[in-house]
Image 1: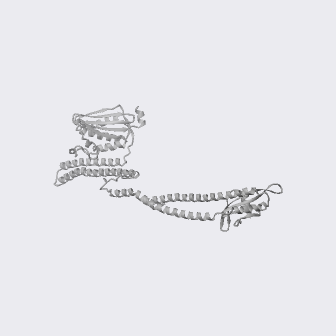
Image 2: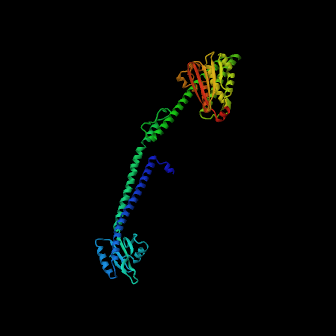
Image 3: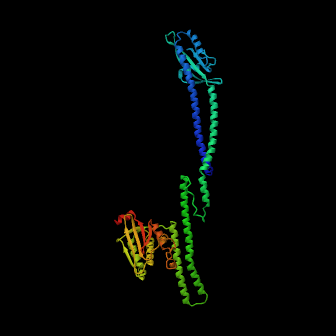
Length: 476
């Protein structure tokens, strides 16, 4: 089995093709040989049946035992021109009445065949010759002392040596042809399989071009057979996913380096400046407080990146419980009320009295908090940040919208990317650039979807979360 697993696909297909062709040719050879043999048997039976019927008709005209001598002369004359045809006539006492020159069959064998299977062909061997014959118990016109017809045993046989010789030569030629045909089929099968598998070799050559630096290369699909076109398309889809993953990983690495470079550089510069000469305690304390703020921001960034990495690899499993979204949004309004008051923003909630879903309370609250914080941060002063909750039979819809700068469509496609900011000038603000990415990972982890739209100075985030049948019954 291990040896077969190491065999190439070309060898396997060639072997199976040769075995299938061999089986068909062997069966065909046996059928032809049996048909030829049956044909010879039918010819022999036609001759033997004719001679047996002729003998039967002649015996019906024999009215006395003396007429038997005349019958044998007539029978001998009727066999002229039939070489290889032998006839034997045996009386009731198992004495041979008439026999041709080579008819040296055993009377007991003839009598037994005529008694057990009259009219059925039998094979009799005499030395190196084999005969196919018929035996029958035939009544004559003569009567015995009791008045019953006198019966004799008649055997008619023909030498099948010529047929046997022909069949032997025919079978030898046939099996030689079958062997040659099998060998030729194997060669042609190997050539056909090798040519048929050429697209696979093309795919292998194209796949060898793909490297970590050339993930954009794709396998040709147009000229592939239907069976391989699906495989090539699947491989291309896999390469596209790998290319996208590598691109995101490369961008992520660049973003991490870029995001961490500034705070680390600031920490080093401030520390070096402070250490450049002796200072009083107040100055040291001021620098340490500033460094602590930068370190806290870096710690939040690292924690957020760890959460995103776990979420993307399916390591974050929500601890689901019944969560009232309306209550959670009201709690978030209280938390962000002071920040909203600084910009004179109004926080508005439009929702039923209770909107329960099955979710992880802390994770869902973090996602809604990130969206609300983002909406407050980018809202115009003296405007309104509106949250709307709507419940259907199978899902709950949450919308968070604010009035501010319109986000261009090309930016909307990347708004959930890590470290992406629509306004690069705010790159070093309070946020880490991971809030929306974390919100999306949490929503997707709960089996939901999130979408951002922006037009007419209104930016809206729409969340759709599935509702379990149990919760649907509770709410209705």
